[in-house]
Length: 291
Image 1 (cartoon, rainbow, N blue to C red):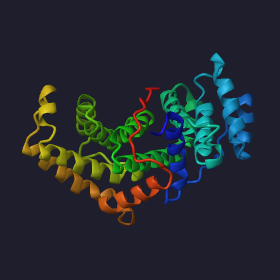
Image 2 (spheres, rainbow, N blue to C red):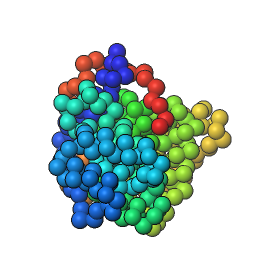
Image 3 (cartoon, rainbow, N blue to C red):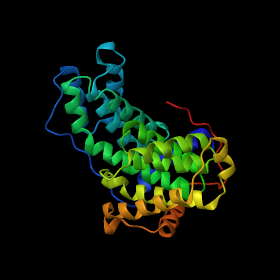
Image 4 (cartoon, rainbow, N blue to C red):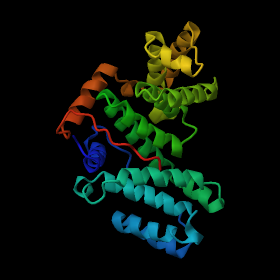
């Protein structure tokens, strides 16, 4: 069975094995005003991500800097870049998780002051690329019968982008598939309550929304989970199924034609990537901590 460290290495290697190109993140013209933070900016420009991560974490341990959005921006990017380097996976087995954790803090403190708002705006391309990656990771795990791990990554995505209801809806689907019924129902209902006629999904998660609505409809139609639903006083009807399928069709207009992939093709691709680094087919039973 694959151990805890190996599973982390798997997640990081997945980033480098994805067949699509991730958006290349560059520092913008906006810069932090603080001189100590500014020194880290130069490290980022030079691609010294390990040093930048170390310096950012050191400054964040200082009470004065613990809510500095620039530092969380740099920390997110540094660990994301580290996570994409196979040669660093042994030394930084938690790099991707650290990137997600920093992204959450960046969102948490984005409105603390005007400079934080600027840093958050400048980080949008990075956050989009990070979200794109975890969506793909979640799909790979789900396609290889590990919905619990798939839910884990989307849960982290929702933490740094709580307004992305596509992620929240699909997280709910994965939770139900993992038999975490209560959490699944909670996320699905919250997402559906937030999606109205004016909702426009992000470009990178539009396909996720379409897939999530279809998966949700199939869950209800199967009747497989009805006995679990009843324990939570959740009693879906045929109308819920019809509404979900109708919404799925409606939101297909936001998916670019060249990005439309059938579930069968996606699954084949996921299995190929997964087998390229996984030495065993056994499930990993590690418990993910809730950071």
